[in-house]
Length: 294
Image (cartoon, rainbow, N blue to C red; front, side, top):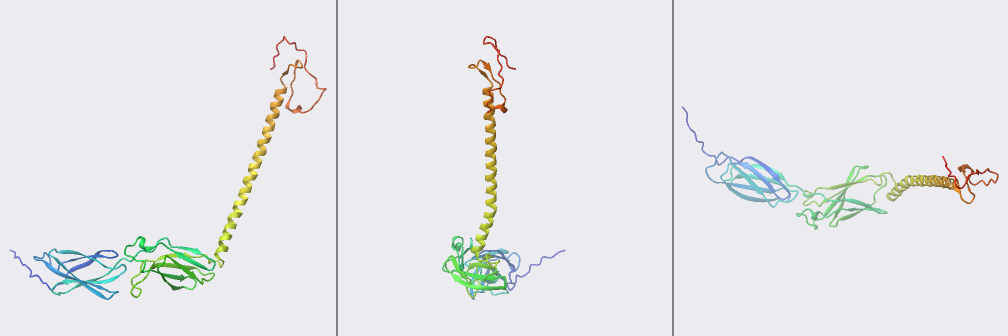
């Protein structure tokens, strides 16, 4: 035997399993389940969004008969903090959660240019990749001194560069640039950080760069000298071989038969250049007798 029991829906129960599905810079997708399974009629939900930074409230109405409800909260601010409350329209028990939207990205291509008595920080405009960023908001710059273990706020600017002076010799610094924080420093962009250690040795940056150039020259100059010496030796060797080949050719040409003298003259390469009139000559050959040289 069995009996079927149908529970009476309790509209005083809170929505179940409220959670965030996806969060962006200006929106958040939330999901929850109805207070009871398989609603037999449309249920009206009130979604209250409290901005914890601006201290403002917004209420949205959502009507659905589904057991699972998904809703997208729009027009949020990057890096914002929100408290979301979902309950039935009759102000029943509520479910709540906190949401932090994604902050603005860090500026790209942060670099440092060293001048005589100061440095310049440069970076790309954040508006190039962030449609939600306005240049009038500006950037703020922080500096961390690792030797003193101190973080300092240097200021803000609406430009894409910032001048930093009064740096101390022997200190290492880290600079960070981010979209300017709003409303008491609670809505900030992601920082771009760069380490500046040119002064770590206690020397001026220009002196360091000239020292590096001197070290490179000390390596390159000897290598070039050795290459020149090697090329010179190679030319001398080639010249000597050319002279020997020329002398051998001369000796070969002089060893052939001379029609003016009516005789054949053989000479070795060692006797070239020696004018010895007493050297014997081979004679006795007739013009009509062929000469064979082995």
